[in-house]
Amino acid sequence: MTENITLISGSSNPEFAKKVSECLGVPLTPIETKRFNDGETYAHILESVRGHHVFVIHSTSPPVNDTLMELLIVVDALKRASAKEITAVIPYFGYARQDRKARSREPITAKLVASLIERAGVDRVVTFDLHVDQIQGFFDIPVDNLEAMPILAKPLSAIKDLTIVSPDVGGAKRARRLAKDLDAPIALIDKRRPAHGKVETVNVIGDVKGRNCIIIDDIIDSGGTMANAARELKKRGAKDIILCATHAVLSGAAKQNLSEKAIKEVIVADTIHISKEKMLPKIKVVSLAQFTAELITSIFKGAPMGVIVRGKHEQVSKREYTEENA
Ligand code: R5P
Image (cartoon, rainbow, N blue to C red; front, side, top):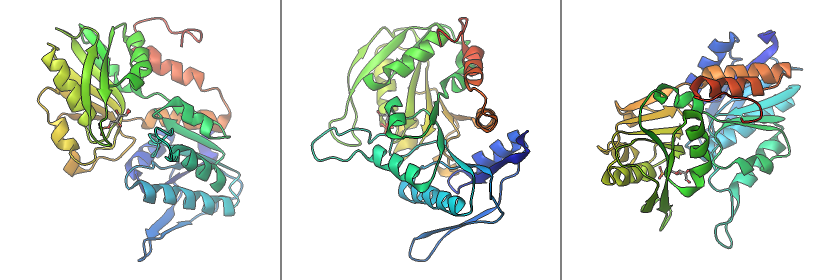
């Protein structure tokens, strides 16, 4: 059934695309992408895609403006090559944190990006852990926004005296969902950002003394949020502190922040390629490639995704999982 899936890898995370292709047993369709001397992006699909359902696997990760532009250009090339349907598999969706006007005269760039992707000719988007669920509504095409946490947290489910911690109030829903699966209490950190890129912890809500804490988040960018949270939990008597986040952006001082001794382990997904220079022995990368391959198969066949998603929760969950309580 999978022989008519066409897979294209952008240049942002070819390792991930290769793994998905291996899981599906479908080769990647060759494509040439390059930058001209003036910085413009060029893309050329090297085989016919006429009438195909094409899945473009490409994170709009840093350098975000370049990777976003590449996605748009690849989709344009596919459209003009008469692809029948284009699904953009965007494991990490850049600009998602610019999802609202926090002050007067600010843009809502996540909406602008959604419009650009749609306008380029994408028929459907598959992504993981959008910064906020509402971004799905910025599109007028189907968006499957999947949760990676059940897969990332699976190896942690046997830990005793567990508390799931959200490093900010915005992540409370995410923490509550995992806490429900692991039958663990939650704690919240009241985080403030006095300026872009600066983090301050005001308070910790919930009991963390003597608890093993998993701090979960969608993104580790500079690592400031996580390092700050870990220090606060340690001050309040937490035992082991493990970080679990889907997208390892790891910009700026991330390596230094994650080296914080209060942090025992960092679990992230492979939605963004981590270069050797940014790696630390305590960073463990869990692959979402198999999950992505299952999602692609389901979309291609027009089959419901609920079964796959429930399956991932069931693997980590300590409770019985049904469609009603999902
Ligand atoms: C913010 O609301 C996000 O969920 C992350 O907490 C944030 O983007 C992490 O950024 P950083 O690692 O730079 O503190």
